[in-house]
Image 1: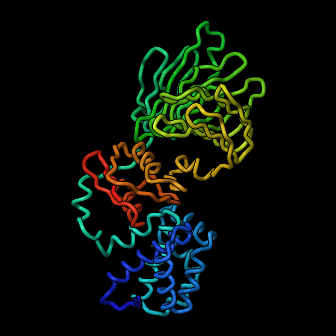
Image 2: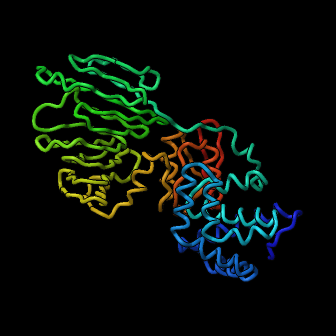
Image 3: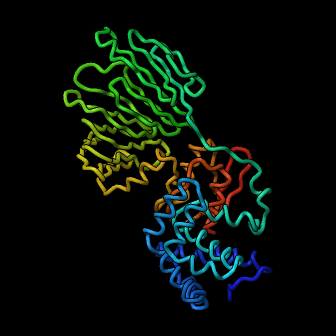
Length: 413
C-alpha cells in the first residue's frame, strides 16, 4: 500500500501511521511474527530513503529516551522537535504541509508505542474515532488522577485529614509538634518525648487515589504511594528506629550509625519481611494483591530478610520475595521501581494485569477482565492524565480494549 499523502486521505494516513507504529513496536520487542515482518518490510520498500533512515533512527534508544524526557514534561511539541532534530525533519519540511502532518503522525505513533507516551492519542484523537463501538459508548464514565490525600491517625485515635488541613501546626503530642508545611509535607519538628514512659505511635494512611510525603521525627523522608500506610513512633527511642509499612513507599533515610533504621513490612496473608538500613534511599513494594514483594536499593546499603533467609543489597539491586519463599536478588530497573514517585505509571515489561493494578490504586476503580491479553508492554505514562486518556494510550497498541462504566473498567483483547 502506497502511503504517500494528499489532502483527501489524511484519515487513511493516520490509520496507516498507527498500524506501522504497532509493527515497529513489536519489532523492537522481538514479538513481531512473520506476517508482520513481511508487512513492515513491504511498507519500508515503498518509502523514500529519508523515511527508511528515519525508521532506523527511531529504533535507537537515545532518540526514544530523549523524546520521552520531553513527553514526561507534557510538551508534545518539544518532544517531537527533539525527535526531528535527530532524524532530519528539516529536509522533510520541504515536502509540504500535509506530508509533514503524516510524518509527524508516524513519529508520534512510533514514540508512543515504543516508549509508552500519550502522543498517539494526542495526534490521532484529533482526526478519528476508534473503529467499531463509539468512544462515548465504551467510556460512559471517566476518573481524574489521584493526588495528595492521606489521613494521620494519632496515638489517641484522633484523625486528621492531611489534604484538607491548612498549613501550620496540626497537633501537639507531648512536647512534639506536628506541622504541615506550605508544600504539604507533614513533619515532626522536635525530637521530644524521648523520656516518656510509654511510646506513642502514629499512622499515616493513603486511600486509593492518594499519595503523601511525610518527614519522620529523625528527619527521614517517606513518600507513600496509593493504598498504603506507615506506622511510626512520635520519637525514636533506644538502639533502633522502627517503622511498619503496608503497601508501597520510597524512603530517604537520615544517617544515624548508632541507631539502624528498620522497616517491618506487612501484607495481608503473607509472611514477615524486614528491611534494615543505616543511611540510604530505597523503594519497598508490598501490596497484598501483588504476587511479589520487592525492596529496590537506589543508594547506600540494606539488609532484607524474611525470617528464613537474608540478603544484603548493593545499589541497583532488588530483593524479591514471592509468598513465603526464599528471597532472591536481581538487578533492578530503578526507573521502573520508582516511576510512581516521579509521577509515572510504569509499563516496563508489564502484563496488562500488572498495569491495571496500578490503575486501580491510583484512579480508585475496579477492574474486571473479559478474555486474555497475552502481551508485555513497555514504557511509562504520566499519572497526571485522566483515566480515559491512560486507557486510550494502552488501546493504541491494538492489543487491548476497554469499557468504563461508573467505577468499573472492563478489559478486553
